[in-house]
Image (cartoon, rainbow, N blue to C red; front, side):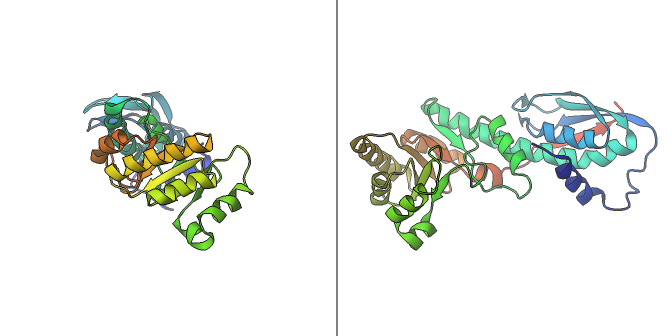
Length: 276
């Protein structure tokens, strides 16, 4: 949920304490125009910025809409001074979010070459203060949010294993979680992955494995899960690019998680124009 506090922080950063640049009288209309092709996202955040300054958004496309060069994504009506003050923040938010959604859609399309069962997920590698915007953009692109924050799932990582050992770490966190909270274990080898299943992991993340090793380890995890009489989700992660997605989807994992969806997406080029 985007709050007034979020919008106020964004505007304070851009407007400062003495804005002369946008001291323009009268009323105006405006439109957000795409100069790239991609997937629209972040428009709710953009609308919130205009609304905070009492500028009406009279029309906007839905997040997840495919857009092309020249398409109008959003139209506004209101005071010129307020419209111009909101403009840059709104454009930056929508452009960044649309870049995330566009990259996510490319990754999802690549995974779909191997069926509809492989999820493409984001990670917690988000911009501080913009996680909600970026995670919504991932959903707009057809991806999965993964954990929104640390409370959504326990992830036993290499540092936990170094401190407590794999089995003890899983037992430690299992004692402290609700029955509804999954425990995921990060594994760098096939042996670790099988140990994670035997220790009671709900999800096993295969970290920084090549596609061939991922396929063999995914098979070993499922064999161990069958022996244990339960289902275990297999996730691949670690430096995976959009170009790598088909190979990992073909490796038989359930989830492909990619930090690059949020931390390395290029913004979509948008322009805001007033006075139609």
